[in-house]
Picture (cartoon, rainbow, N blue to C red):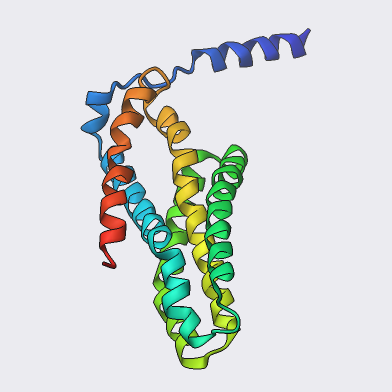
Length: 193
């Protein structure tokens, strides 16, 4: 009897919790919207930047230093690896967010992307200086992980927005949030051209 009364009180207290109900216009006025959007822009810019030059980077830069290894076939496989990492990032990070929460996942994704992107110029230099395949594979692994970050942002952000603003207006809010990766699709590739 006491267990049934305690379960009734816990179910009534959980039903008393109400999700936020913030519309898209009000969401635009929150700092969270702009911080998430800026993070989304940065993660997507890096991903679009790498994907836009993946095959030419392999063919024109790395093949000159490692011609026996870096062939047209190798470059095409690298592009395939990046696509798989994007998909893996969407699935893997989304599954992790179910376990540790959206906020923790988005924070981890954002924080982990910074050292990944900052290390890539050094790794490229190591390939060119050493002529070894080890830094080349480190570059492939680093860019693959960085692409998972972009996939993670696309996969986890709508659910995170629903937690922040409530599910009722998440479609309109996420529609406005998609401005950031759209801008990144232009900004990312133009960073290196």
